[in-house]
Length: 361
Image (cartoon, rainbow, N blue to C red; front, top):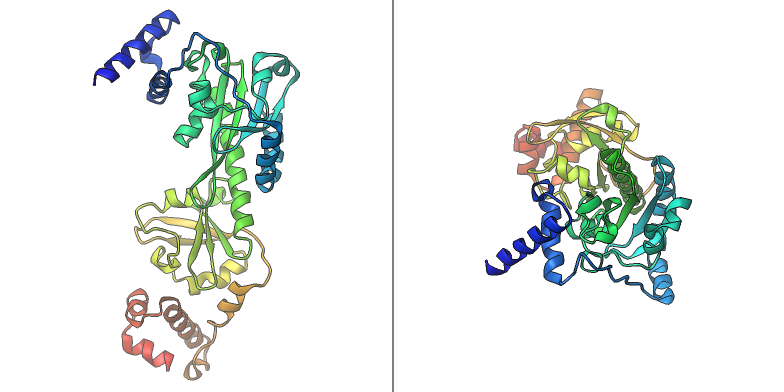
């Protein structure tokens, strides 16, 4: 309690000296300042510039080469979208080590252009409160504007940063944009977030290229945007991957990883897979009663998924005389194969165990 009291007093003194009002600082910023003070940083001195060697930078770039091939086109697009002068965009690894940057001419000649360079480390414990470092700490999009920066040397710029989250929920990099302009802050952060979501989507599709990837959203007009939830489904109808949007939209149901599709949605996977493979947009409902629109998000080559799916499309001999009987039988047999449990299949389909036995035999 004593340490906290001292820290709060130090922050108050710094704010007074810099002509700032504490009630204008958000919780994320004030907590960051507290961490900076506890680390021993002095806001009235120039921050120490920490650089890795050219050899180490080359090694780290090579390690991240696959990701950089996706990131660099996105930061080039982001650079073209941000209006104004004296701005830059950067990509860092998950620790705040800058790997790639793009500047305009004005920024390149200023303090930001000279300090935010490939090989520089912008972790909070080194450079104080800044957008990139704060995003590393909090693992979420951040804005650090003007005097919110811990060091006076940075108080003339605004920073906007957003983490890149992989399919496993881990932060694997940061996209940052910095400018001396205080206008259109939310607009700039929205563009940075859009860039990271686009990167995450491309990484997800690349990771699960041999699986069936489904895009879903409560509104059908959003199915072509980066706000969709993504589920990678294998040939057994099991979720092998889910992006962050999917985890948010399906929160409260089940742990998505390695979960059967039928335990998430009330619609049997076997009953809709044919329409999905034919690129139809379907409306389905989860087990909490929420409806979403779903569509196949990519074309993929014939693989294990298709092979497994094709094995589940045969009706028993006694059900082959009419289309209605065949479809009912295929649904029952497919559901049993997916659940591998007659009782579970019975509950899902709303039919008796005897009926399921009949179609299996």
